[in-house]
Image (cartoon, rainbow, N blue to C red):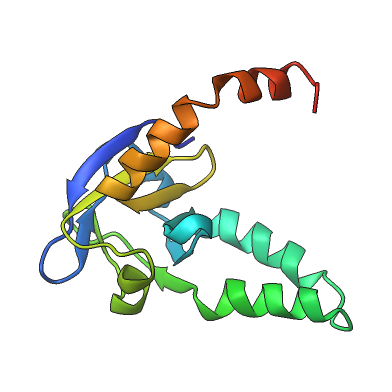
Length: 142
């Protein structure tokens, strides 16, 4: 389970240290891909495989389903943690999420999101302002 938020710095070679508490869940391999909202998403390999199976079950005759598969698989990159617990973020994925320097690593239960720190802080403020909307969702009003 991925919970919490950590700030780390992306080095000049595109390597990012993953917090120690997340490493054991990523030790069997991982997949890095574009997330929504201009962030990157890091999935444990087993979680990505389950997602891939759902995408594979979508009808090939549906243009939206084909495009969803293209978006999901074309951007995905397999990766592994190095001995120091770092991952290498490919340049094209770093560019997509505007990652350079400070990165927020955000636990999302079954996966991680990687955000440019200033972008994350802006989003975090927007999220905090929506407390009443979230309470309504939890109460089943939506």
